[in-house]
Image (cartoon, rainbow, N blue to C red; front, side, top):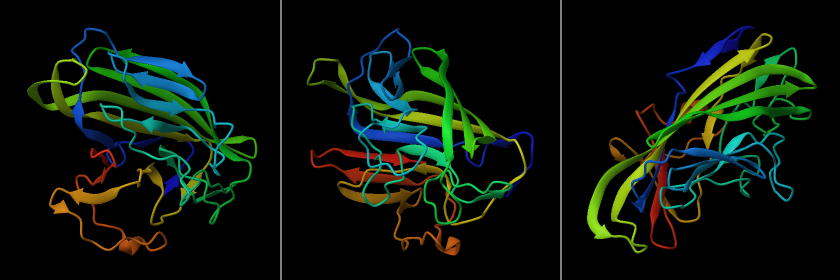
Length: 270
């Protein structure tokens, strides 16, 4: 794929919906709105009743195993009951960070790897830097967050990124029981996070076609995990990261769910 100087939009192909689900949610009805508040590592999106949906991380923690130069990711990302569903700098892939968007093989005047792998293009002096994170709109039902980043290589901006993130909570069903904290009926549901990525290359760039890159959700693995698609449990062999022909076929969605030690099942569907 060649990105020519000018506007390059990623719409339907990578306008991804991320479903974060857990067994129960104890959200009370509220007329308040979603809010975006700063913390030491970025900006945190909170529900009207104060629960964390995600943090958009803009600053790397001082003590971290992350080997990638870039942060600019969603971490943590939580279920309605507060369980975390993605990992940050795990031992098996220390360059992965929550939910992020990058490429590991970009060719042009200045080859670059913003993914953090470093096998097919340089990572040195290549970093995605954040310019701004702001709340465009917020109601009791949803929030729209705007993120602006620069993809910089050797001091030059290769890509200007404009990402819009729309978040809401969906209640699937409600049981006529009182929650343990007395917050009303127990509600079963999910957070839905919709991404719209718009990239403006400042010069011609070629994205090498490989088995992976682009949108990534690094799910937690500390439990028994199961992959599913609309047909049920996925029984296909694991794909190989260097062999695109082993990738699973396109589906409307894939889900990864893991059963935690506390008995809850949480997961991510894309």
